[in-house]
Length: 135
Image 1 (tube, rainbow, N blue to C red):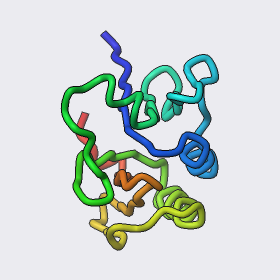
Image 2 (cartoon, rainbow, N blue to C red):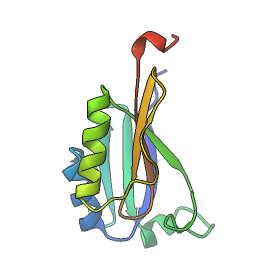
Image 3 (cartoon, one colour):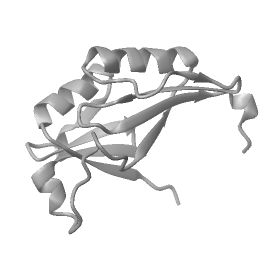
């Protein structure tokens, strides 16, 4: 069975968050996007991120929402097609107001860098040499 993945992230401002991720090249599924939630397409038919304004997000859990600017709630790892794509995505994120929590890392077979979005969520973007990936 092929599975889809939906990662739900609490956000403070829908307009700012959508603008940030659109500047990185992500699209949104209008059918599942409104003022309370936005369905960001990571890979068509497979992976999505639901950006949910905090009051709406709170309706799905009895636990308090973590302040991602102060604590690590999740590390989101996102693969890229090349080292250049890793660098380009991080540069776009920094230009849109994100920050880089760590310097890039080059392990030869894997190259990674990352950014923190406007709500403090950490996105680790990486490229892995396909000749080193075991199937």
